[in-house]
Amino acid sequence: MKKFLAYPVTRALLALVIIVILGTIFNADGAFFDWGTHRDMLRQVSVYGILACGMTLVIITGGIDLSVGSVLGLTSVFFSMLSIHWGWSPWVTIPLSLLLGAGCGMISGGFIARFGLQPFIVTLAMMVFARGMAKYVSGGQKISNYLQKPDGSFENLELPAVFDALDARLLGNNVTVVSVILGLSVAVSYLVLNRHRYGRYLFAIGGNEAAAALSGVPVLRAKLLAYGISGMFAALAGICQAAQEYQGDPEAGTAYELSAIAIVVIGGTSLMGGRGGIMLTLLGTLTIGYLEKILSLNAVGEASRLMLTGAIIVGAVMFQRNRAN
Image (cartoon, rainbow, N blue to C red; front, side):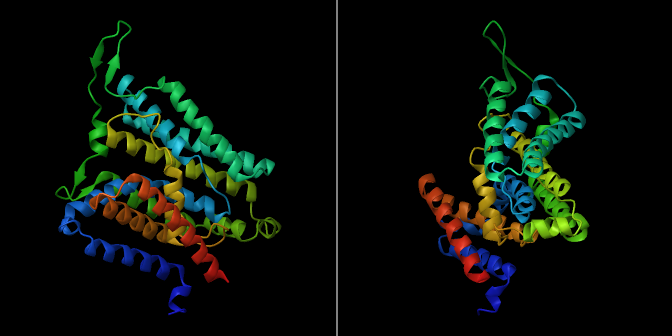
């Protein structure tokens, strides 16, 4: 049994299996066995999973990105304003939104890699700045298709087709587009980490940054890109969030960074850096998704959910530490 648990993937699978078994026991009068429950779970957790894809790359380097939730909110407002209020094409708004997110991430990565500042402090500052920017740009209001005119009246604007397209269901209404986007995000992250030398750079930096630099690894460029990719995934999640809610909310993404970190840690990626993988993050995404759904089906309050998530994070980190020893 000890040898079986020595592998992160087996521990992540075991956690997922335990949660699913609990779902079959506490099934809310059979609601857990309805396919719609699993489909809705995937839709709800996909935004967190997209954030976790970028978070995985950063954590593998031994860093952390606390700004992803705020960047999600900023991008949600920016994308909605360009699409709904200004009527710009999605072929313009989506790339610009992704560039905005990548830019926020690269600013954080620049301070971390170039000046040697602590990732916690830098990304905390970006978290506050991006949230403030979202509120400034939106005037503290949700950006929806109801536009207030100078005379105080409201105009009902036509909602752009891209919102319906991103929130649509495929394959006989069995899979949502945002879940497909999560799958593509996982696939791209897997290729970067496992099939490209850049992925080896990230693992080397997380294992021993000084040794990696002496071995010729472009540490500054690699870390800059890692945080840039994290910001881009946060922007992608913000676009999906706006499409799901049919509006850009400056408060969107609040505390989402905690869920993303929880997903990565529960999956088995080490917070110390140098060890982990995107498939582990996918297992962590499903684990958190099912946990949230089971608690929701059984009418467990938000306060209890937050406390349970916090306990699970601590437990997962302690379990990793024991395995490493």
